[in-house]
Image (cartoon, rainbow over all chains, first blue to last red; front, side, top):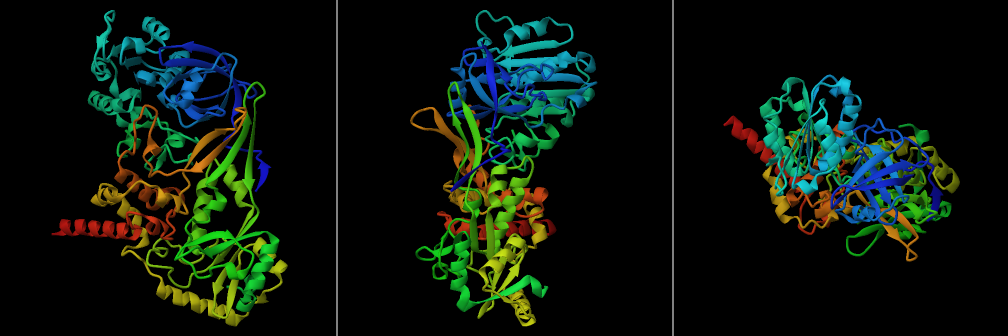
Length: 278
Length: 355
């Protein structure tokens, strides 16, 4: 067997440095990452990168910062598996490998001039944060912006500082709910679908962006259709266990679609007849 | 057929040819491996080669996309470093049937689609392919005619066709021509040889016919109609989820990527290994949700990846009709039988609508 260096490799990552780490909850941390040579990541909201911890593994993580920021990008990581748990042990100044961005994100150009209804369940807020911050950075281009956020308990709330700021802003309507309240919780209690009927939007010119745990989608979509949001305007981002990001390894396949290349953001019309999607 | 594209090799010179061919670069050919089993392995002489063989246990994909393939070597720590490279071997593969050549053509398509898989594409250039045409069926499990892989259509450098006393050899590429020149053992083909080849092919047309009662062009429709079919449920009940069918499939290329550290904990490699959509954790995500939890869903996925999804993307089936999945299945799940059942069920449905 001989060896030959590959000038082009689909699997080699860029060196990146973790410049800041913020603990968001018991299980989630926010990593601020800077690419060492390449500079700007240049992603679209909703796209993901492959994060490498050499010796441990590589995983897909959605970028959760605005594409308008060019000096760094942010990844919100929940410690659930081998790589994510190791990632939680990293310190400021440590190195990771990054390749990407991959996939099709939210079609921001198409969203312009429309009302936006952003529906985030739990960790789903991470990829949506990149959309929300992009929209806020370009606020004039969009109509009304609603953000509905739901999580299990108040202590699971991600980006609580930012949520609070958004709550204060006049140009974004924010409401949230928790499945189980804590004694000091004064807000809504119940599943996220309970917030949808009360949203004041013009459904025919509204785009809904929905990200959350698998169980959430069917209920939210049903409610959105009752509300009158067109199927094409319901945008969903899917989580799959991608290994390559290049549409090859087969892990993320949803029937004939590859989540890593054709997605992770799909509109409902594209996938409503596909089983294995939601 | 142009005479200059063909040469002839007398059978008594076959061993000499193989010896000379093995002198050029490492030669791989099918050899017998116990009762009715064959494998591609290195050979040095003609006697080792099984010229009459049923498809080998593993297809030739093991040379194009090794089961375990290093993608990167890295060192961790303060002076971390990552190198991307391919491991390759300069090889000649001799004796590939048209089904296995079709399998490589499928892999070529899938892995050269953007974003390209440079590991695969770089490696394949080191491999010379010499085909061996089947004049009759290898066994009852083959369904190569149904998927249009029973007759040669490119994908090889040289193609051998057995004409009794001699082989008629089609030169398809320059590197094929080079082999003919270097080995200095072939004779020019004359019109009588080409007439013989025409006769062989005509005869083949009588021998090979659709193994399942459906026209090729109707297969995608059949699958469009059959997604909710009970046939999948039946298969799912028998399937053991062992992954044998995808392992031996010449067009299955799904993989897992893993890291491996050396004992010094500083150096390591990232490699890919064959994976299988039939295995339970394949479509599982963090948190434990599984998008293809049930066996019948995984089996159905395999069939659709062979007969439906690639048709839109690559305008061909990703089944080459080699029959390996059927031969290897411990639960006797048969590809031909499954297609037969789908056809029958679909016909029944049409009749019911009429009555």
